Image (cartoon, rainbow over all chains, first blue to last red; front, top):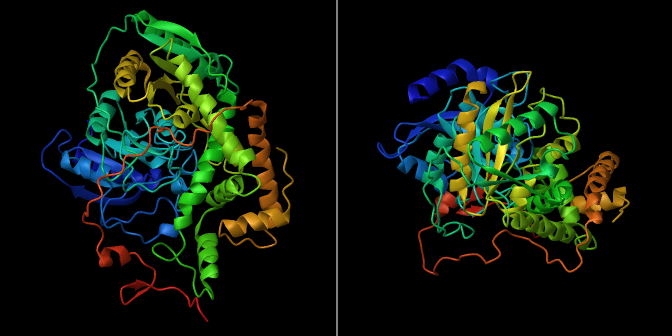
Length: 446
Length: 97
């Protein structure tokens, strides 16, 4: 287990190379509790009062929150020791952490490769032993994919399960906070602390959080496998595909029943996701106007110039691209054909999952179609990077809980992750099954 | 829906988004938007006749808290990160000539 002393030593020894942190500062809360003394890193779009928060953007350079996010309050009350703020793609918009305005983060398992994103700093910190666990945020895969790329477990809870109060908004109908750690059981420990209703977030759900019943035997459990997420998936790496079949065999050996299901709108998920997420982002990011906080352009002559110059100077290219797309998708004359159409397809995607729950208890797929790619490989082609989210955006659009579990490495020794998707608010089932899966592949893990 | 993205449309979208683009930026941004719109064109395959848009996973509605006064930010806290402030206010360039 990573202790505070070990984490601090690793940060000093390795972070200059890895680049997981944007800010290193120890913050202690309660001295006892379920996470007493455990070092936890927090993604830099989650507010820690008194520590700078940039969300990976130049426009928030110098910004210091005046209060903690609810999840930070809960970690500190549970005895966790915060070790710093981790790097991310600007505002969470990216899948490699190369789109941070400050620096890229490297994958500790192979420093020539990306750690995934957007919570790449949170994943790299844990993988390099610089924290016992970390918090990330996930809008379309941003916890699950970096967890998979760094050989970790990572949970995106059901939409509404964890408070978003004090979290920098990207796409408000999709954003969720969740934990990353080396094991599913450690993820569950952090999840138990941060989950539950918060009166400061009107979208947070008032559903009871049930304890996980850890198990070895999966007798009678029905695991849905969609061909669109495995054998009929486009662009799926052969090693990843073969490993998923190994996982399915291991589950069958423990008594689970495999059920073929269909998620026919999988191929429309990316398009629906990018229209919905960018539309919401265009509204959310309108708050960066150079007036109340953040960077302001020098000597603007008019109020309009203050807005436009502050934003154009300090928002990155990908963020501006997404704001423009979202603004277009919501604009008069185009809203029905783009935003509303995407929301209608979103319902079809959610309905596909609801239909699957008639015959299965959870779904299994790869987390990412490919293993971590070399740094720089996709930075010139944002559309190619969007396609890497093929399996993670569906559960996000449907608001479902999803867990990435490490299932060993491929022929190049690069980590592979399996995604378990559960019914709404049934994190307990995917955590219990994820624990079985992880233990089955522990010997092959990095 | 096929859309022809030209410089004028990009400029109009940028204006709505409060982003300043130079004329030199326009062709590249237009090409970029066209590529993304080509990607999302796959949605045209889906028959959504009669389908109600799903705009939020919580269709049962939001949960407002009771309408009771609770502690919030102090004026100093609210202004703590302001790029420019004066006499307890956010300072902006002159708006009225």
